[in-house]
Each structure stands twice: as C-alpha cells, then as structure tokens.
Length: 320
Image (cartoon, rainbow, N blue to C red; front, side, top):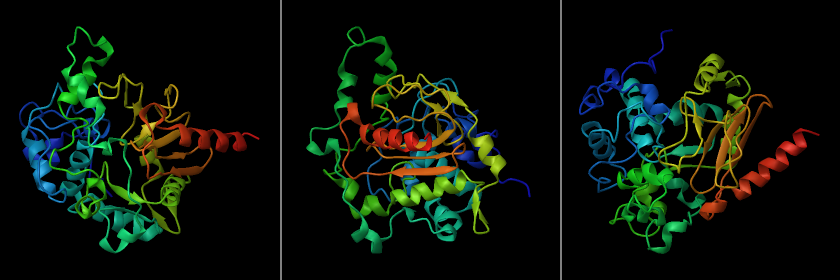
C-alpha cells in the first residue's frame, strides 16, 4: 500500500494555501522537527474560541515565516499542533483528535483524548500553572531588554518571544486551560488529556513492535525512520538548548540535559516533555513505555525535578 504522506514533500503539496510569503519550499519534515520558522503568529495569537480550528490555521497559512524555513531549529510550542494537525486533516480528512481516537485510542484501549469529551470533565484534574498569578509570563519581559544588555545567547530567544512562541492572550482569564472551551478544543500540541498509564501504554506498544492484540499503530520500520535524529540545537526558542528531534519525537540521542531544566532523555529514548513537568517516552532498548503527568506546574528551574528522580530510580532498578 502506498503511503498517504511523504514527509519529504513540500507542505503545499498537501496544503496548497500554505505555499506563500516565503513558505513555498517548506517541507513536511520541517514542520515535524521544528524547523519551519513558524513558532508564533506574526499578528498575535488569534482571538475567539479555541475550538475554532480554521481561525488558527488560516492565520498560519497566510503569514510569512520568522526566518528562512529549514535554516534553524526553533521550538513550535503551540503552533505545532495546528501546523501538523492541518497536514493530518488534509491527508486523511479527519482532525487529529478524531484520528487518534478512531485509529489508536479506541482499538488499543488508551485513555487519552485530544478534544476532551464533556462527559469526562469530572475525571479531569484542574491544572495549576505558575503563570496563573495574573502577572503574565515572566519570559515575556525579555522582549523589552535591549540587545546590548542581553547576553548574545538570548537574542534568538528574544525574537521568539516577540514572535509569540510563548504568547498568551489578554482575553483569556486566569485558569482558562480548565475551561470547557479549552478542554473540548483540539490543540494537539498542548491540550491532550489522559492518564500517565495511557501514555506509558502507548509508548510501550511502540517500543515493542508497534502493535498489540492484532492492531498496528505503524510499521516498525516507520518508527525506526521517525526516530532518526533530524534536527538538533541550539534551539533558538528554548534558550539555545541542545534538544534533538526526529519526525515528531524528542530524542535522547546526543542530548545533554543540565540540572532539572530538561528531562533526562538518553540513549534510545523517544517521546516528549510537557511544560508542566510531565514526560512520556518509549525506550526500544529496554522495551518499555513511561508516562508521568502532574496537575501543578513546577517552577522553571526545577521543571523536571520530580520526573528525573523517578526516571533515575527506574533505570537504577533496570540496571540491577
């Protein structure tokens, strides 16, 4: 069977309206490994309901990139979900949440949703974010610091903040991420709802041949291809961090975490970390999946302290 998606094709092959204003040669792989230079919205984050998918994708498809696509890695914190999600919709016809539910979650019994069902609200813990003080994101203030004062390693970070990589919206109240609109929306990069067990199960299946009980998520060789290092830091958005990405996955290869600002990915790990301090990954060498979630965001300098301690304990046991 011929694959529906070739990651080496231009984005415009699947999403014609995207191919304008300097984005004509952007490849699908550039989106998947955070090299499309579309880490924010040029005109600010669109207003209105989070559930209005087209408002966000229309804004992204029409704007120019912040630099030449493919030239540098810059973490697409929120825009990743709409960019990759729209590719899924264009190729398959379904939104990312529906695709995940019908092709992965339901067949494999994985308790995870992108676009939370209203009937599951009472199972959902409220998120407590460091930014809920009403004082805004401390990172935002970097855009007011002149370059001659700012260390050079933060110049790209300043441009990313000015471009909205971590942008909020003045219209959103404190705790908006606990609102029905946010929970029910499909923002595949930011508002998946599920359990640690569900994430561990998903990555466990991927780390053991990508199939279980007669249902396959993908071919093992597809995963092998997806976890080949494709891009690495310094990441122009994440403080110049040395983060390595494959096709959609953060990788342990060549990762050099410092302190608890980053999770201790290493060796054959593939997965992703969340801004609240949660982490999920697969480990093919050890044939395991791992998931850790929390509903209270850690302070930035110790963002991954808890999960790193759990990971240290887990791998100490495996090495016995």
